[in-house]
Length: 92
Image 1 (cartoon, rainbow, N blue to C red):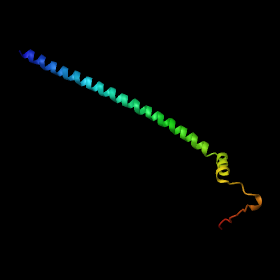
Image 2 (tube, rainbow, N blue to C red):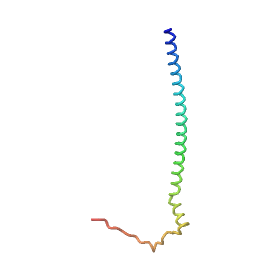
Image 3 (tube, one colour):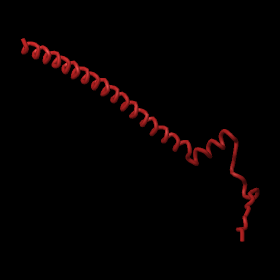
Image 4 (cartoon, one colour):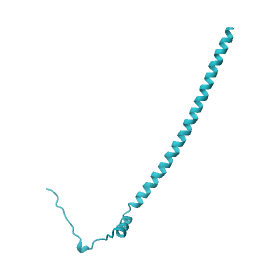
């Protein structure tokens, strides 16, 4: 009779441990899936960042800025006779 109770108690503990392992594995798989999603998101953001840096470098090139100034704003290089050079004296 006593062994029956001990066996029953051990069976309950065994079932509890098995359910704990199953729950732990399930949670681990869910967390791994979330981690993979976040890593993919990070890769996409990194790629977008690189593309934006390249676009920024392209748009900031002096030749492109000059072309935009001439085409859209009607700017032009001043004539040499209309250019004034200002020389600042250094402070003593």
